[in-house]
Length: 203
Image 1: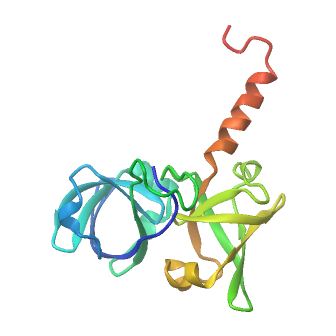
Image 2 (image 1 turned 90 degrees about the horizontal axis):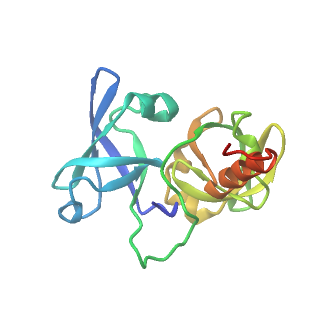
């Protein structure tokens, strides 16, 4: 579990593909001697398991399904990615609860500077739009953001200077795809509504 508060920007140092899987070596400013094998790290919002560590780097493996659903299949050496270590009990919940299970990809339609902030308009798969609501939460490439507006075609967010400068959003351009995770609570609410429409759903 994560909070969507990015704590480092890592660099993809090496990639090996085998079958449908991708094995990545990621350079980081984290103290890697404190990262246990099997630990979870969100890489551009994708929850990945650490399989190996070294000085200033860790390695992860992404499955074929992960590559299919996320932007990971497009990553190349030298790419910069948002990193967040898993939430510990007692840690401050600065963003919102993020699982690291990507629901799909959103597309940055427009990036508009407004004063010292940036207004982003995104499109998303129609199947995910019902779970995105004004003043609700989304995670884009692992970044916890508040939805400013949402409609039948997409949604909008406002990026403050600190978030822009300390995440990979600063390197994005219009037409760029980002990993999208919708709010878990919205999914559960929709599921409960489905069951309420059935007289005896468990019969």
